[in-house]
Length: 188
Image (cartoon, rainbow, N blue to C red; front, top):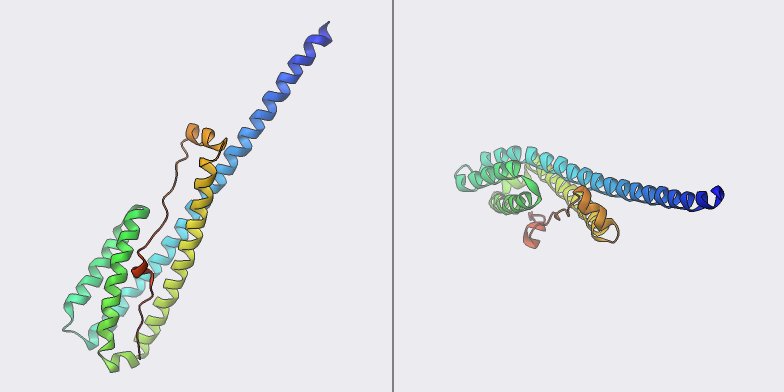
């Protein structure tokens, strides 16, 4: 008779253990995906900081040739400061749009000065900025892919039940306006 009672208890115990293991595995998967999103964002942040560091040198180089274009220099400086101080994905995206527009204006000013366009410092800074833009684009793509995987995971059944209980929430994509996504073109 004891063995008849032991079998249902053992079955319930096995079901509870399997369910607990499934919940733990699902929770760990969500943690991995969330950490991947956080890491991807930090990679964007590294590339943006590199870009921000290049901008003052670029402005100073152009200033040497076009000192009367103070409005453009001020706009770039203000846009850079706004981008550095932006918090969160949405605000950072808006600030990056402004900065890209200001940089386009700066490069447009540079086109009017043939000596500047031939200056090796300017050319080097321009190449570094283009490289930074490419790395930002790659980092943004990786971040958005990571966000898509994470958001899909927390919205899919049964993970959505667990995600709600443990405070996992959808992350925002890092989007920039199409016009701002274009790398400024400088013609020689």
